[in-house]
Length: 138
Image (tube, helix red, strand yellow):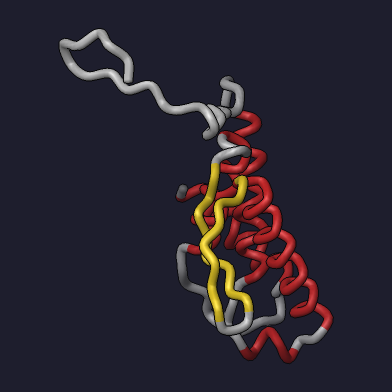
């Protein structure tokens, strides 16, 4: 996680060389964990709240959909911040740290992980439950 934070900080510094604002936080390291999660568990279901006007709906999305949308929103906002430098002074979000951390997490887990991605059992099948000392299946 610390390496993800360092990679995120380097990406932020690379794209914001002229900024004199201090940067602090762990969001780049968290983004590295998200990138690793995407590689290891691409079909895992992520429970999320989606606002639609004044209503909210809870849905389950595959991790690849949720994190893909999150990543492209970071790229969009990071690019917008580069195009309009006034945005860099406003929100204080290190968009490129998020992007750099995420890409680092993707790359590192691809290089270091010998195992294949984990896929979950289809929810349409009832789970098998075992009780200690009982060989029956429910």
